[in-house]
Amino acid sequence: MNDTMVKFVRAGAVSHVGRVRANNQDSGFVGTVLHGVADGMGGHAGGDVASSIAVKHIAAHEERYETVDEAKAGLTELLHEANELIIEAVAEHPELAGMGTTADLVTLVGDQLVIGHIGDSRVYRYRDGELHQVTVDHTFVQRLVDAGRITPEEALVHPRRSVLMRVLGDVETEPDIDTYVFDAVDGDRWLLCSDGLAGYVDEDRISEVIGRRDESSREVGDDLIQLALDNGAPDNVTVVVLEIGKTELEPIRPKLVGSAANPLRYEASEPKRRVRRMLPDVLQSRRRIAARPENEEFVAPSDEYLDKLIAEDRNMRRWRRVTWAASILLVLSIAAGASALAYDWTQRQYYVGIDNDRVAIYQGVNAQLGPVSLSHVIEPTDLEVNKLPVYQQMQVSSTIPFNSIADARALVERLERAVD
Image (cartoon, rainbow, N blue to C red; front, side, top):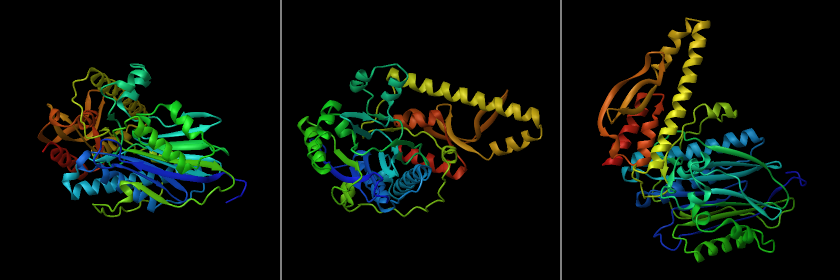
């Protein structure tokens, strides 16, 4: 590496079980060129297993990327692979059904820092005395804040603040991963943390601690953990503190913390590492949104805000379907023969949705072409949607697409196990 280029010059990772929890479901790691945190969920069902599977796999496959596009694609691919391992773990051990994990990864490419993000763990940048949250929480209340329905202050005490909209887990085969790119400047400090810190310590106090230049990254991490504990943090707390510079201040030694530091009580098979897809538009073409609770406390679907959000999501999807249908009509007006090909493609697609308040497998795509529906039920089930956990109700209500009926059947089986 060019000596004039910025690099990670110090790094520290610390994790604590918190004041109340019996086990640590968080995991974190400092690597050679890649660093991250993961906050598991699922309680005794295996939140610690989910975060540990993800972090152990990612830490074992870190690599240096030559371009920002490669880094964004590589981080997304690593998180998708971790998701596959979690799905495989649930398939082989049904008692783990419902487990999941958030994840945040960071790496440097030249003078730019690249982030991969899913869930409500956070990444902060400390620069010139100011702390700034650079990731956006994938939470129900954040969606309400973005829509102007509630204020950020109301979100802090909202009864649905524990509901996550996206995580790595056993429902989505390729969950939607956010990637960010920021300039990395000599003197920056970056903080990755689980919500055990962000949920119990305000940003002014975090900024004060992370700004202590006379302390190493590990010492700052210890201070932040202690601050969370002093505030009574009942949740697990994990932090990774990184310092950017041009001259190495101390050797960075790879380290695992939290659940990942312990032997994995379930060993999943290694996923087949897919060919790297470097172009962001290719990666985005198969993204879908997952919905999961932050922890083992599942939320009943009676809250009026939840109903509003579901309605809002349906309206957005309906508008996208209208746009898609209009595009199809335009293509048909130019080349009538394309209609047969388009219809044939739709009938090779499948999705899991709702039919008469029960889960059902549909063939086709969930759209209308004028008066013609492009899908129909091919496998109804007796599984009542209102018996599913909230996050799964939201998923099925929004429909979950698949490229094969086998994948759709596998999801239905997982949903049935979740009810059992």
